Amino acid sequence: MTTDRSKPRILVARAVFPDIIDRLSRHFAVEHNQGDAPWGPAELAVRLADKDGALTTGSERIDAALLAAAPRLKIVANMAVGYNNFDVDALAARGVVGTNTPDVLTETTADFGFALLLATARRITESEHYLRAGAWKRWRYDMFAGAEVHGSTLGILGMGRIGQGIARRGAHGFGMDVVYHNRSRLGPELEAACRARYVGTDELLATADHLVLVLPYSAASHHAIGAAELAKMKPTATLVNIARGGIVDDAALAAALRAGRIAAAGLDVFAGEPEVHPELLALKNVVLTPHIASATVATRRAMANLAADNLIAFFEGRGALTPVNAVRGA
Image 1 (cartoon, helix red, strand yellow):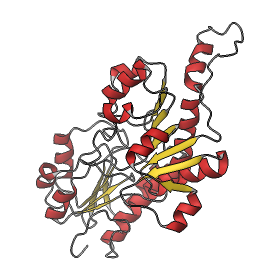
Image 2 (cartoon, rainbow, N blue to C red):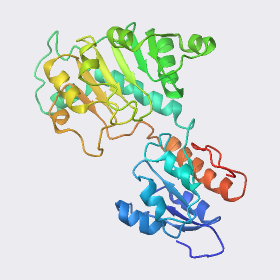
Image 3 (cartoon, one colour):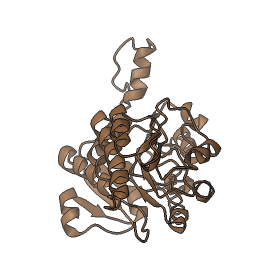
Image 4 (cartoon, rainbow, N blue to C red):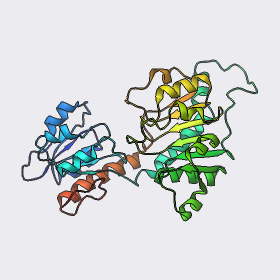
């Protein structure tokens, strides 16, 4: 950590690649958290009190109360494509720029989304646990027989960059019939590239053999998949969430899985994570991963570098590269 007062002062709120700290230290006076000690809102506010900028992750809530404690703060660079940890209205009211890291994680996250779909449909986690427990004694015709993927119907809720990446993998790699719903319909060229057909939400739920959630979290999308929506799905269907916790009503999903109203689920995100709804933990027909959809070394490094690029460009007067809010003069 440097104490050079001639440089803008920034806080790096979580551990990051050491060379990113070194890079930032050439431009800023950096306070970092390479020990990755958990900071609650009160401690985060204290550490931001004298900072001009911050590099955050989705774990740090940036809201009006925190901004009031950080009068010098001008920019917060999220090392994530999502930014539901930002109160965007509060940032705008204070004239603070928020940034995210779009594009650099699209293909990696789409890869993982499809991997989670395959693991869920083909009961990979459940069968591995069975094998490791020493329960595999003989072959049986229906042992861990799962759902077909090739040639089935892939439903996508949320058709941004990652959703489009999953659609391409399904349509081109697995011969799937792709249907999607989004706030706005894609243009004809994008639909053709994804081999995807736009449908209403009811048709999406009713026809998808495998439904993948890739929509951003907001008040409008809170519990977008709840008991009523799950009841509209096929009993043989699978549900995969790589978007954000809170989009799915975890209690309703656990009840549907337990009752066999849908066949299985694959979840990388959870409401209140890192806590996971205890009823989900008790079920065999759910694949659970700890928010790792973008977790390759190359992609996480690209995310960290883009967050650093945003801070450097902003303080050099070039403006943030990937802002999520409009701030006059930024």
